[in-house]
Length: 331
Image 1 (tube, rainbow, N blue to C red):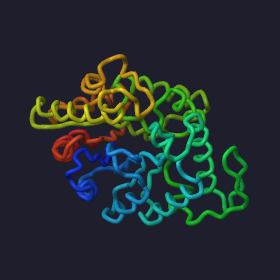
Image 2 (cartoon, rainbow, N blue to C red; image 1 turned 180 degrees about the horizontal axis):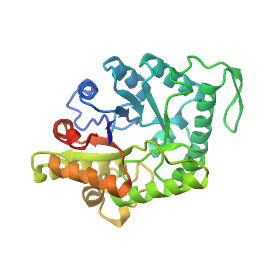
Image 3 (cartoon, rainbow, N blue to C red; image 1 turned 60 degrees about the vertical axis):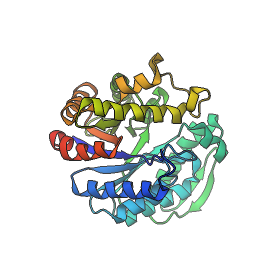
């Protein structure tokens, strides 16, 4: 099983310097480079202290400069907020500077405040996402790009630099909804699976993706499908559950807002449960290192998980994931 880390940049306590959030993340990335992780996947968010990394490409350059073998993933480049040619240039430049270590993950986004601030109508976000991805891939594989779309038109533009990896970096599409999964499968894209689905829903979505992929004439064989999971690990189950509970509260408050009166993001149902209980019981992996390793193996069996994209919820969780869990599940 491959293991990567989904790196958020949460700024929970504003008495702590923002620079220290970045320094801690970069220190973690350096450790990952030396301890057998496959990739770091950098999360892009805007206008919220939930995760303060507005440029995964700039952060990716910092990560690449501090590492030698670790792959640098974007999870994700929020494609609707970019001019497609600028996005193609930035990711290609990161690929060149990293020595060909980029994993490109692209997504539509679902944060209402981001759409509003960037002037992107919510109802246009999916079509803008699809067109932007199409342009980026064509820009990487054509000497000069000519394109006539709904939102963008280009005439014989040479996009430089070219990516170092040929024909382009490995590519994934973030797919949470059934519609997104079906679009990705229908176009033969591999997918990134989100950290907020329940474990049962994750397995259902993975099976549905495989079915729709085959129906579209594409093979499921050999595909790498990272599945993101929020992970809390500590010496005792009680300590780990408390870490998970605090993180669940932070996550829910960030998504819905304190008091849960107004959704910042697209509405989630939480399977009809209390949101905190939903995360604790159905989403997060938490417990001792032994227990979390067992939970990962269960997901391997139930959901076909061959790539864990872990989001450690504390420094202690990351340390134990590295020292105790990774050796148990690697290989």
